[in-house]
Length: 130
Image (cartoon, rainbow, N blue to C red; front, side, top):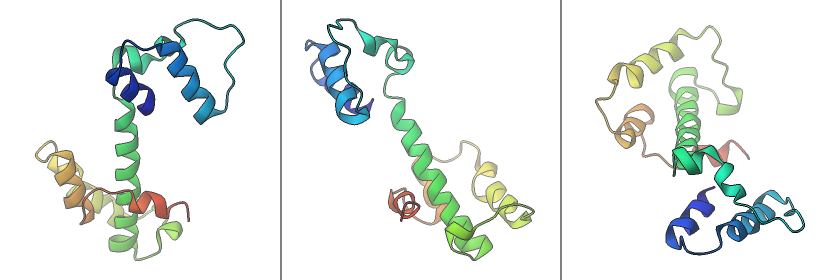
């Protein structure tokens, strides 16, 4: 979706159906139907009603991973892959103080820094796949 939207906005006059299927074939490994000529990309609700929204999903996942690592490190004192939150009042307190109590008083990037001690980055997300 990211690549489709980026290319669509960069060159809206191009054949968007071709662009869509070129990217679907490349990233999803789904072959375009033989003889298909329809604006399939337009069936994606995010393209039509909330463009550029897929970026928010990724930012949310990066924040969730980074928050998980911070709680494992600062509250549970375990490796992130060993963290269990059940019955941990410390985790609840951490979330209340570092995330929820702030409401909308900080921008998203300042919230990430405040809650985790570092700027938002893919480092924790990537570490989850080691």
